Length: 390
Image (cartoon, rainbow, N blue to C red; front, side, top):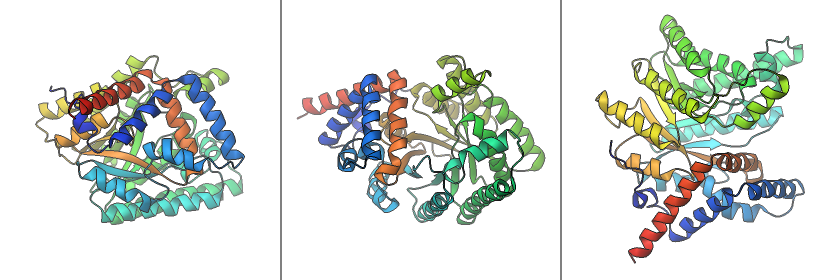
């Protein structure tokens, strides 16, 4: 397998020297764990105290990891990436809301991104988070099979209705829809709704995609059981595979509450679980479609190799590679140059409202030291290459 991910000229072709310098500075900061902790605390304080920090945030971390403050704002980024064959997934990344009015805003925003995707080849997917359209604690209560109060039942019916409105609209507009995964203790309730949506809208074509976090040791079994259900009931499966984003929180809660952690015992076990799930889906492409959301180069090479072995063309619509905007450009752009289907998650939203997402992103990068060092080395290599060629 040709090692294509070291090509920094292709990876950073769209970045100006100034943007390259900013990216290097940001990842240098993220590599420093105490600095991330201090920066996170200061930023949270500044936002809660309504200090005028939005301009500084916008000019640094926001513009590197986000497409803009609204969907229109993102279009220049979308069009620019698409010149290199990299598609976009507009991700309304406002987190942690608890009010019905906020859930309705997220619903309307998701419907708007579906319309955007319908009109633009460069946006092949829409996406939303379950807790963007329903209260976290309500998912937990449903998942634990506790009896709801009358008012909670009415509230839950509205959550299910929002899911259905979004999935029905995606089906009518013929736009594939990614539904993100979240913490394990709310996920059972979300999984149940998404399976219902697949039953309804994945009959002839895969529209609805759930997400499996493969740092959970139980997810491959979940996929296999879903496969049997899909075969018996006659629906198709769309699945985004990721490693996961809540590891420290998951382990801490399991320890506090005295149950077995849902997280794999090691990084290697997670990698093995991820690759085994990709292989399982590749063996059942007759009813499955895979969105491989990964920043792991080895997993990307393995999927490319499987495609070659099965004589599947890079552009086969059943297989997509996905990365986050602002990260792993060496994977995204080099894959796209070889003709593979690639989409970047492009977060957007008001600066203050997107800060929980950005803080989580910084903390994740800090906890995966190899990822940050890899980004720094690639950026340094490209800076030196440009300097040598002047």
